[in-house]
Image (tube, rainbow, N blue to C red; front, side, top):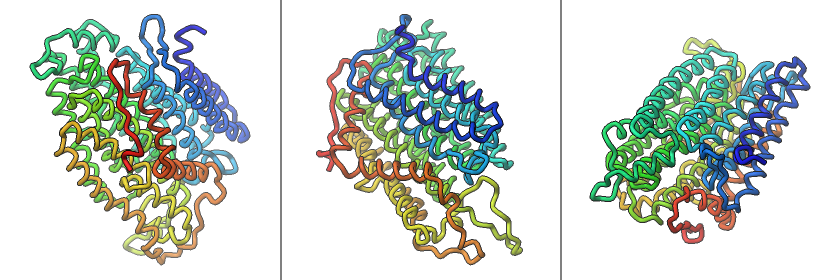
Length: 541
């Protein structure tokens, strides 16, 4: 097999299957639309198994020019994106008579196109993970993002979805322009396009007395512009304003997709940028270190504060997603500020572990919302407004009392919310623990205190969701008798079960937690020849 094809085999598989799904989308037959999610699910499963089998290999796959390099980090991200991607396929599974969607999603006759866009977006994450070239890195980020603009717009036949798609598209275009501005200056100041060579050029430059890389003014501007562009992808402050409207306007399965896939591509791109800016190490310029610290504080605080003020649960989860980006930035702040290699390794391992934890526990919360109905709204004049098409539970009124009516769904939501808070016996607890420990080792005590305060603040709106489901009485508007929106949707129920099972498994069973850590540990090496440290679940407990 040619080296380039072997290195890009997962991307080729997903792209080829996506093209087949586009052709299948031309068929008007409902049977063809029902076959589409099966094909998408099988493609992701094949990639997941392939990446799982490559987990123990130490070789680096690369093309002759070194443009695309697949090492431990890329292997892990491909496995993670494929695994979580299967949950998103299950959440978007069409189960109505014409296979045009489900009560929380309506893509019409475009089933082939919808799932093809999903596979293209996940393939974009793969490209970002393996890119060693600024051109390919930009193409990967955009491949992960552009399909989501379309998915938002076609997910529901209501004006709010189209408005959200337009907002997301124009703001995403602005972020792309900012990224291109940064990439152009990065190339202009070095004359190089390969990330590894740019990092070597920065390493050869003068270093500060503290050991940090010293960049020129134009190089610093390039790095700052790229950080700004990547901040949009992870919904970090101040480029977070789109999140609330887009998450609310999109159909719930698409919102779940947005909360993980673009965020993962942006976070991996940011990690690669920081590695390059440090001269193929984590010896960042002091300006970059301070910027990451400030971004972490603002993103956590603004996300959790705005989350407290929301009445729409999808907006709550949107602002909580911003806060979780802030938590991961705490890990990056520890990564760039720590002087010891073992602390740097633990910090990056914490970020990668948290990406997996967030993807697992967040999918279940959106799945529960999909299985609960949207109640009819009553205006101040007493007029009843019927629920919008392709709309499941979104407001606190919708979920009031549903935990008592459907205790299994209520418990599933409780487990996911407890994990998002970071309570013990959930994977979210270990996720936050592995971010806090390297920050303490790096003497970032103030940042740790702010993170713990923000985690406590987030408990207010997460516990409000649980309390509303179990303690609040159902509204007396005649809608309380409505049964779950999708009583027979086994794929969605399977996604919830897998999410809750993973949340508890990796949070309570130490060998299972250690198994995930064993996948994360080599991914944090980034080809650096330093000794590696491994956090252990046993010690944490």
